[in-house]
Amino acid sequence: MAARHLNRLRHWFWLFTLFISWNGGQTLGKAVMGIKVVQLNNTPLSLWQAFGRQGGYSAGFATGLLGFIQIYWDPNRQAIQDKVADTLVLKIST
Image 1 (cartoon, one colour):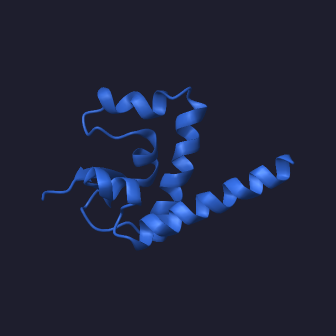
Image 2 (cartoon, rainbow, N blue to C red):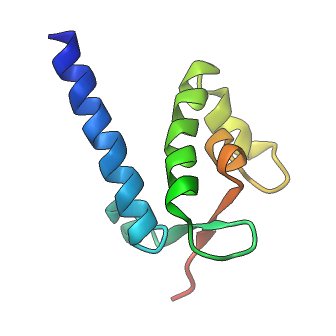
């Protein structure tokens, strides 16, 4: 049973990694919120950076969610997954 859940989690991990890499730094939720993820030099994410950023979510949970709420005191408003992958989340001008 646990192996099945782990396998399902692995599939979602890869799905989000590929989707955010191939869709200009946006998942469906990010598109709805009007935000996207870019490299520090404002270029689209590579597949490797998208993979690292998804892995950074694990670090956010492992730190007792401090990795996520550090956006409130970080000067660049980066969470731990952004620091791992050298990315920023930007608001898209409409």
